[in-house]
Picture 1 (cartoon, rainbow, N blue to C red):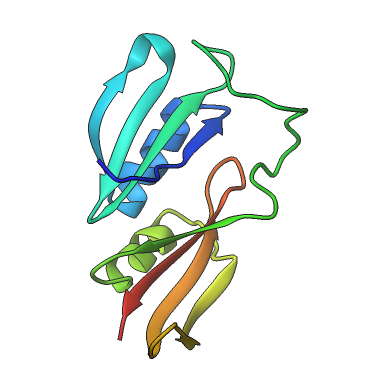
Picture 2 (picture 1 turned 120 degrees about the vertical axis):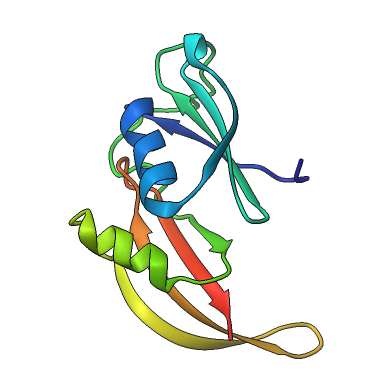
Length: 131
């Protein structure tokens, strides 16, 4: 398991699981349906989905959509084009269209193709592939 794994509070675990697995390509590593919980992975990325109101919640304040404001989750994948095609087929609009960006790092720079999309609860996801 990764050392840092975000757990996203979701309003509809079925819709979120469908979005992450069927559209983005994540796989369910394990789940606890009775708690509305699923642990997902895509390549080296891992995240958890937790149904609001089922099992134990980690809610620190009012949840007002879109959830996750002020954060975006970068998810590195092997190729973004197949994911973009599935998003388009599902009628899901991109928040930020595909672009190529170069970022300075501590020792060098990295160039990646990337786009942003919001999940069913409004969490902002930035999927990227190294160029």
